[in-house]
Image (cartoon, rainbow, N blue to C red):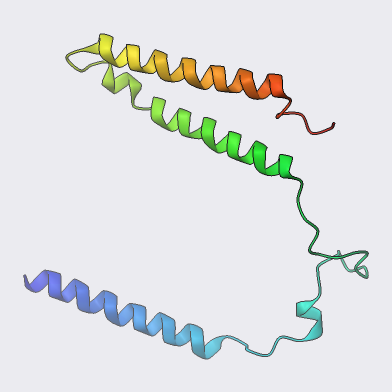
Length: 116
C-alpha cells in the first residue's frame, strides 16, 4: 500500500509542477504576425477559413471504416486456434463480405471520385 501512495504522490507533484511551469512560461501576448495565416512568407492571398469539400470527409470516413476492418482482422491468426475455428472463419467471411459490398456500393455511387 505504501508503494501505491508513493506513486500517487509522485505523479500528483509532477503533474502540478508541469501545469504550473506551463502556465508560468507561456507567452500570453500574441502579436499580429502570430495571428496571421501562414503563407510561406508571402502576403495572404485569400481567407484562411475556406471550407473543405464534403468529398474529403467522405473519403476520410471510408478510410477510418476500412482501417477499423484491418484492426478487427489482426487477431484472426490467434482466433483460429480457438476450439471452434469454423465459427471464427464464418464471422470473418461475413464481415469481409459486408465491407466489400459496402465498398462496391460506394464505388458504384461515385463516392470515391474526387472530380465530378
